[in-house]
Image 1 (cartoon, rainbow over the protein chains, first blue to last red):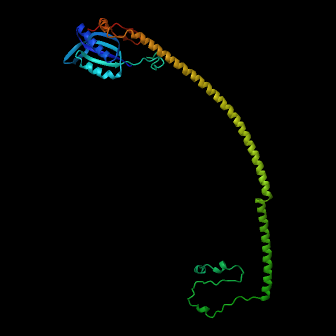
Image 2: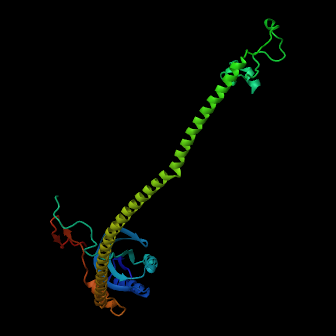
Image 3: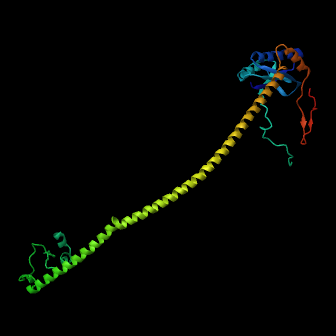
Length: 115
Length: 208
């Protein structure tokens, strides 16, 4: 199964509410047949710019990242669901590239450049 | 033919009649049959040239003799030529030639066969060598392929084992709350700075 990464920016809320939102999200994933690897928090930070979403303007948000394996069929419905969630400011679903071995990597070799 | 010739102005007598022959064919000159005779020719009586009978007889004999001799000679020569031609094509000369040609042909065929045999030996040897080389290469390729397959399988097995190990850490409905609490307690920071020499700096300014 391909491996996805869901990076969400949640509204700046109190801890129990954030926990509830996260629980909601992960349960949605689980009920659609995903296998959740891990859940990381990148802290509550100031957003790089003001985001207007669900009838309000936000300056701070909580960054969270969920690592999971899922079938590609659920991707669009998942994004749809997350857009509708009022506590989620920006959902971003990315596919994780498969790791390349040394032999396959044909990029710049390890040598001293002139500049 | 006569009518056509009568229209041409060239002297016809020389064309038709042979040299010194008695027979002359009548030919119309410029005038046609219905034109009146010329005034200067009204009283003309045409007489043939006078012939001396004695002379005529002798001449006739001599001429027959002469033509007889000439014809005999001519036929003699013709016969010689035909005989030569016959000999050339069908007779002894032809046989000798055929024999020579057959011998030549046989010797050439023998040469050709010898050459063919020689080339065949060389070719067979070469093909044998090539077959052996190909066999060797195939065997090497087989071994390589086998090894690569084994490597691949080993790699996949390793991946599976790694995954099994990691699977113990996956989030399940039971440890969901616990994991959420853990995540909220430990905010991670993936930012870092790097310069051209490759030195990494993980400590960054904290943003509120």
